[in-house]
Amino acid sequence: MAKRTRNSGNTAGQIDQASIESNTYTEQAGARKVIPAGWILGKVLGNVSTAVEIQPGTNFALYNNSGTVAFVGFYPTGAAIVPSATNSVAIPPNSYLYLNSGANNFIISSAAAVIAYQMYDETKYSLANQ
Image (cartoon, rainbow, N blue to C red; front, side, top):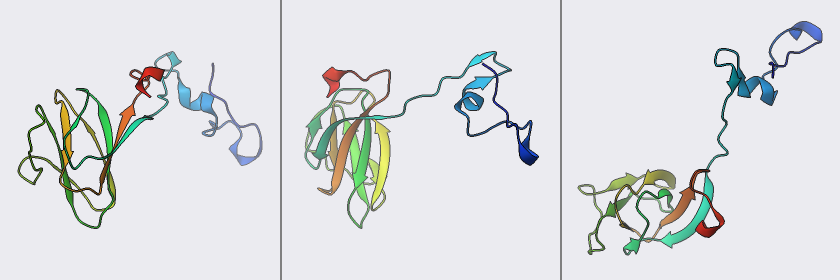
């Protein structure tokens, strides 16, 4: 499918950037590009200030709903580890952070204001995830 062009006015013959065809086809590759659907919301874990067991390799959107910096960490065991600047990742105040759990089985945050959302891409999504 060829790129769409405009047919009127001063822009005649220019590529129509608003057309999905212009964004999904590339002449150099000779085929359609793949446009991902984006992230899909899975389970809402909620407050993770105590260790919560998770699947290894899970993507997370973490929201810090406070006015101060919070910390979140992924760990292989559910031991009572308190996340801090030395063993975890900082989440800025009132911000989202996107992380993957890697090979770890537990997630824990330093504050009750941290809310965790499991996120799936189109390769991992299934109705069983819900």
